[in-house]
Amino acid sequence: QVQLVESGGGLVQPGGSLRLSCAASGFTFSNYALRWYRQAPGQEREWVARIPTDRSSATYADSVKGRFTISRDNMKNTVYLQMNSLQPDDTGVYFCNVMYKWSDYWGQGTQVTVSS
Image 1 (cartoon, rainbow, N blue to C red):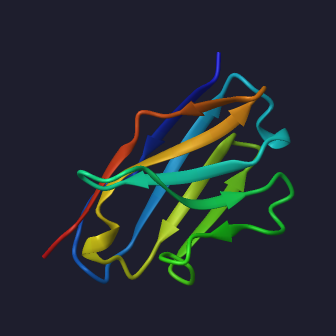
Image 2: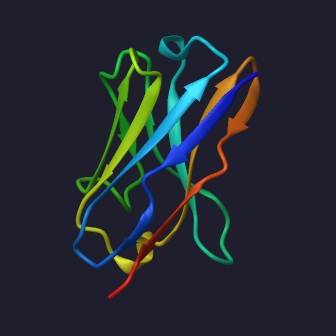
Protein backbone atom coordinates (compact mmCIF):
# COMPACT_ATOMS: atom_id res chain seq x y z
CA GLN A 1 0.00 0.00 0.00
CA VAL A 2 1.01 3.62 -0.42
CA GLN A 3 3.06 4.98 2.46
CA LEU A 4 4.54 8.42 2.97
CA VAL A 5 6.80 9.12 5.93
CA GLU A 6 7.91 12.67 6.65
CA SER A 7 10.90 13.64 8.78
CA GLY A 8 13.20 16.57 9.46
CA GLY A 9 10.93 18.93 11.37
CA GLY A 10 11.93 20.70 14.54
CA LEU A 11 12.32 23.98 16.35
CA VAL A 12 14.23 26.72 14.55
CA GLN A 13 14.78 30.41 15.14
CA PRO A 14 13.42 33.01 12.70
CA GLY A 15 15.74 33.27 9.73
CA GLY A 16 16.88 29.69 10.10
CA SER A 17 16.62 26.72 7.77
CA LEU A 18 15.27 23.18 7.81
CA ARG A 19 15.20 20.39 5.27
CA LEU A 20 12.20 18.09 5.30
CA SER A 21 12.20 14.62 3.76
CA CYS A 22 9.36 12.36 2.70
CA ALA A 23 10.13 8.71 1.99
CA ALA A 24 7.57 7.05 -0.26
CA SER A 25 6.69 3.43 -0.97
CA GLY A 26 3.90 1.37 -2.49
CA PHE A 27 3.83 3.02 -5.92
CA THR A 28 6.16 3.80 -8.81
CA PHE A 29 7.59 7.00 -7.37
CA SER A 30 9.11 8.39 -10.56
CA ASN A 31 5.73 8.36 -12.33
CA TYR A 32 3.92 10.73 -9.96
CA ALA A 33 3.97 14.37 -9.00
CA LEU A 34 4.53 15.02 -5.29
CA ARG A 35 3.30 17.86 -3.13
CA TRP A 36 3.98 19.44 0.23
CA TYR A 37 1.21 20.95 2.34
CA ARG A 38 1.17 22.51 5.77
CA GLN A 39 -1.37 23.14 8.49
CA ALA A 40 -1.02 25.79 11.14
CA PRO A 41 -2.89 25.45 14.45
CA GLY A 42 -6.55 26.26 13.99
CA GLN A 43 -6.21 26.72 10.25
CA GLU A 44 -6.98 24.69 7.16
CA ARG A 45 -4.32 22.68 5.42
CA GLU A 46 -2.70 24.72 2.64
CA TRP A 47 -0.68 23.74 -0.38
CA VAL A 48 2.99 24.71 -0.28
CA ALA A 49 4.79 23.25 -3.30
CA ARG A 50 4.54 20.71 -6.10
CA ILE A 51 7.16 18.92 -8.15
CA PRO A 52 6.22 17.11 -11.35
CA THR A 53 7.71 13.86 -12.56
CA ASP A 54 10.37 15.54 -14.67
CA ARG A 55 11.35 18.07 -11.97
CA SER A 56 11.39 20.79 -14.61
CA SER A 57 8.63 23.06 -13.40
CA ALA A 58 8.17 23.03 -9.66
CA THR A 59 5.53 25.43 -8.39
CA TYR A 60 5.15 27.20 -5.08
CA ALA A 61 2.63 29.06 -3.01
CA ASP A 62 3.28 32.81 -3.08
CA SER A 63 3.94 32.76 0.65
CA VAL A 64 7.03 30.54 0.25
CA LYS A 65 8.27 31.44 -3.23
CA GLY A 66 11.96 32.31 -3.20
CA ARG A 67 12.49 30.77 0.24
CA PHE A 68 11.49 27.11 -0.17
CA THR A 69 12.75 24.61 -2.73
CA ILE A 70 11.11 21.27 -3.49
CA SER A 71 13.21 18.50 -4.99
CA ARG A 72 13.06 14.76 -5.52
CA ASP A 73 15.42 11.81 -5.72
CA ASN A 74 13.79 9.10 -7.81
CA MET A 75 16.52 6.61 -6.87
CA LYS A 76 15.72 7.02 -3.19
CA ASN A 77 11.94 7.45 -3.61
CA THR A 78 12.19 10.61 -1.56
CA VAL A 79 10.91 14.15 -1.94
CA TYR A 80 12.49 17.04 -0.06
CA LEU A 81 11.53 20.54 1.01
CA GLN A 82 14.41 22.89 1.70
CA MET A 83 13.10 25.77 3.79
CA ASN A 84 15.21 28.91 4.20
CA SER A 85 14.56 32.27 5.86
CA LEU A 86 11.92 30.67 8.05
CA GLN A 87 9.44 32.93 9.79
CA PRO A 88 6.96 32.35 12.63
CA ASP A 89 4.13 32.17 10.06
CA ASP A 90 5.79 29.04 8.66
CA THR A 91 4.99 27.18 11.87
CA GLY A 92 2.79 24.14 11.40
CA VAL A 93 2.65 20.47 10.57
CA TYR A 94 4.07 19.71 7.14
CA PHE A 95 2.66 16.86 5.08
CA CYS A 96 3.68 15.29 1.82
CA ASN A 97 1.02 14.13 -0.59
CA VAL A 98 0.57 12.05 -3.68
CA MET A 99 -2.50 11.49 -5.78
CA TYR A 100 -2.33 7.84 -6.75
CA LYS A 101 -5.07 6.22 -8.79
CA TRP A 102 -7.40 9.15 -8.12
CA SER A 103 -6.99 8.95 -4.34
CA ASP A 104 -5.06 11.33 -2.12
CA TYR A 105 -2.47 9.84 0.22
CA TRP A 106 -0.87 11.66 3.12
CA GLY A 107 1.93 11.05 5.54
CA GLN A 108 1.60 11.55 9.28
CA GLY A 109 3.27 14.96 9.08
CA THR A 110 6.28 16.54 10.72
CA GLN A 111 6.09 19.53 13.07
CA VAL A 112 7.95 22.72 12.20
CA THR A 113 8.09 25.43 14.84
CA VAL A 114 9.72 28.78 14.12
CA SER A 115 10.24 30.74 17.29
CA SER A 116 12.86 32.70 19.13
